[in-house]
Amino acid sequence: MSMKVQTRQVDGITILDLSGRITLGEGSVTIRDAVRDILAKGSNKILLNLGDINYIDSSGIGELVSAFTTVKNSGGELKLLNLTKKVHDLLQITKLYTVFDIKDDEASALAAFTK
Amino acid sequence: MPFSLTFGGGTSKLPSSPVSAVHARQSGEKDLLDDSPTSRVSYTLDSSLDSVNKVEQTAEQCAIRAGFDEDTIPHIGMAVREAAVNAVLHGNAYDTTKHITAAFETTTDSLIIRITDQGAGLNPETIPDPLAPENILRGSGRGIFLIRAFMDEVHFRQLHPGTELTLIKHRTPAQPGT
Image 1 (cartoon, each protein chain N blue to C red):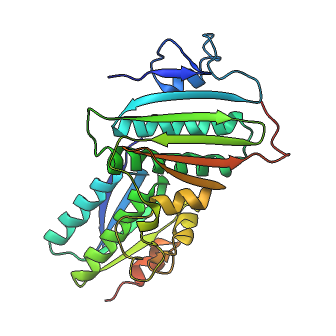
Image 2: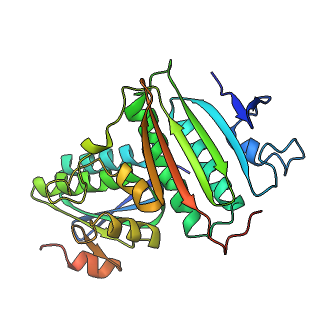
Image 3: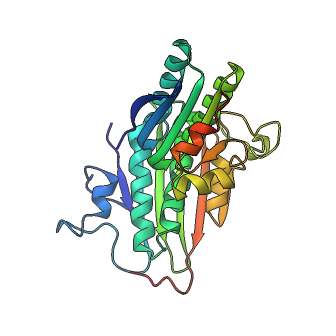
């Protein structure tokens, strides 16, 4: 199953609800384009909801990192929400768990963005 | 070009996909991965992402048949996927005139997967450590690291041209052969 993206706006923060797989040729380009569009529209606070991401490979991990650095370099913030165990474990193995700001519930994630 | 399949040293009629070979027994066709504790099957595939997906699915089916647990099976699938991505993307660079081969062998001790490409070759010594502080925010370069994390043994062999990656996961006594 390829990746799907739904976009919401809450309190000036753009939430991307992602589902499916983030892999080379499937979700990775979709995330890149979505983040680029959000930044182009002047928003730079992004919350990636990964609760329905059931698979991610090294390309997908790389795309999350690239999105994080792109948003950070634009003066914004990108946080991750609702990691599945598989994604959690992969971020632990790759030592990226402490690089990202990761939250388990949407309310606390939204509250963690700089006002 | 579709792909050719070699089994046990001979050439078999081409199935529609690698997965169909694994599932052949369920559909009543000749089972190319027999029910003995050991088996071997190999495919030649186009340099495409579709091939990557098929190799990953076949690896998971082989892991299931070899009796690996539900946590290990997706790890094997991911490691093999990463090896196939390397072969298609970095090795053959999506060159339609080049192919990859994927060989799956189940022995009494191990599941052994060999992925080969026809590219310029890969020197594992030159691969940067993705955990190093200067590399941690790189957008690529974690594939080989994940392969090594999930498999018990990883071996590189230069083919001139091309590279062969051998991925080995050992079966434990608690994992009976199917």
